[in-house]
Image (cartoon, rainbow, N blue to C red; front, side, top):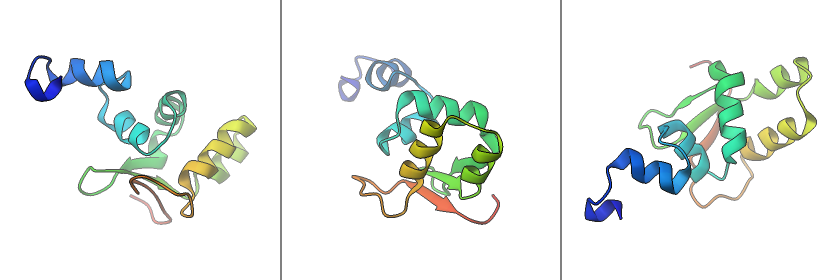
Amino acid sequence: MSKMSLLNKELYNKMKYGTSDPAAILMLKSGVSVTFSKWLKEKYPNCWNYNTDKTGIVIKRKIIEKMIENNENSLNILETRFNASEERPRISPSLIIVTEAF
């Protein structure tokens, strides 16, 4: 529908992805759940960022340590480990781990 210009981009994204937030959409495209992407953005805003060309999300490796320190739910830690794993098979490799600061 968006290609036919019947809907503006924001409305199209809300209908397709449930959000118009670019970061959440990139996370969803990487296989991250809607709930997890919202939680990650709200709870750990300093542990992720866009990659340089804004085609993916970069997650700091230290996020797991911070989550354990904060006594986060074990399912959230497990989902973070899964989504941030470099060995995880992906349709598009846009969720990346880095060790250095942004």
